[in-house]
Length: 296
Image (cartoon, rainbow, N blue to C red; front, top):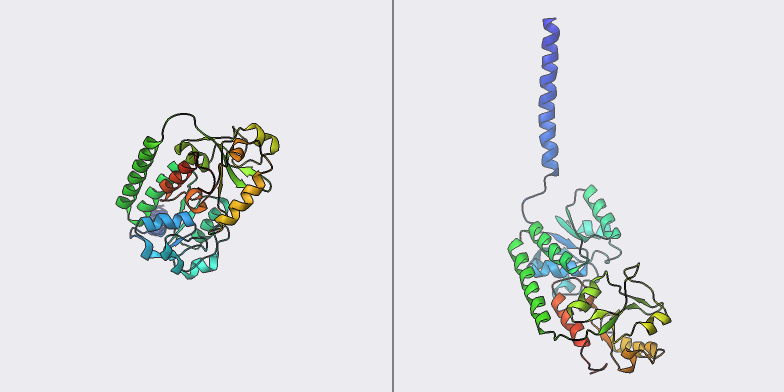
């Protein structure tokens, strides 16, 4: 009987020893590196701008083809587009951190990369508050927490100053156009709606089921639109888009924005990217809410 107890005790000791060794090894394998990353891939234009603002330009080894700011980014290797990442190109950069956004294509990419043991940081940036949280998270992941806090504090102060300079009174009703054919606009649960309100306007579209709903002629006529804003679709094509917009909206000659010539084509990079240039975007929208007609 004593022999069996000795055998059982030995077996238990071996199991405990094996568990301790393997358990500690598994924990080490899944513990993130504490050293700041030195080879970073950015999978979105706004992410690239955030990383540059954090002072991480030299550490960036890959960006998407649609990343175009700051100018230095043109020299960086390309790893596909915002909507169509190139997994092979990403791996070829030998990254120690890949920064993605939270929508479906990027989540799929991040899952694949993590299964291949690449570190990924996924940021959910869909609102201005989400932008601030994203900047702070990027700072924490890259050892630039202090700079991230400075950026957020500076942006909050700039927004407060902008709002303080906006005169009170009737808020212009703004239609934010996402596309014309078919006509699709920004609803209230969107980042453009935040821009409109911070700039001193209000969305001409009431509550909707979809964030970017399609609308018809009846809704255009019934909305009492004071200002129409269209972000540029193609960089450097502002004049062409302006001409197309004037022709398109001429079919509704009774809409106040059309009557008063308050149709504006604005820089899509400034007003469509949730990034460090947010305040420039708010200023751009605020200028549209003044009574100057298109072209002045």
